[in-house]
Image (cartoon, rainbow, N blue to C red; front, top):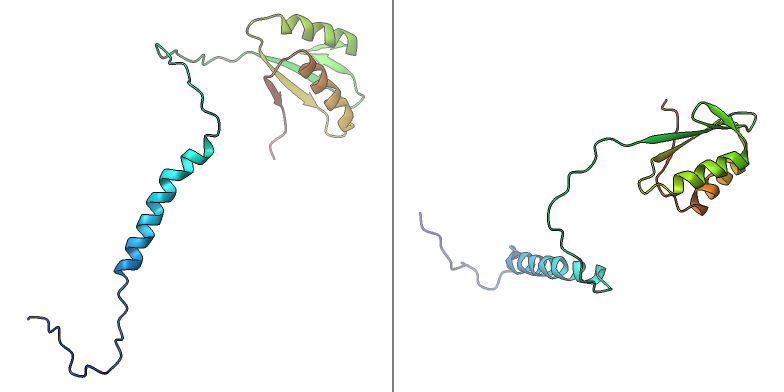
Length: 137
């Protein structure tokens, strides 16, 4: 059946809205924003080096545990150490070209400043691999 394109009453109002131009406008704006957004994020132009070959990441991560019990005593692994000894151990670890991840375990009732003191000691030695252990409920 053929569609009729003429109206019976030419003076009556048109009840259908043509949404095709609105859809075209929406897609045009979408394309413009998709193109300009990455350009806005790059504020500094940097010529990045190219990697020659894909290196295989190490699946194994070394961990060193630093624990602080409820009394505020420091432990390096299983051994109790003083704050001065902890600093010396962190100094020797900072000399390692590939230091292990430092896992900080602290009692939940411990004052927050004790943990921050250990983190400051780690940051002073430019060690950046830190893990804060928590209990999963």
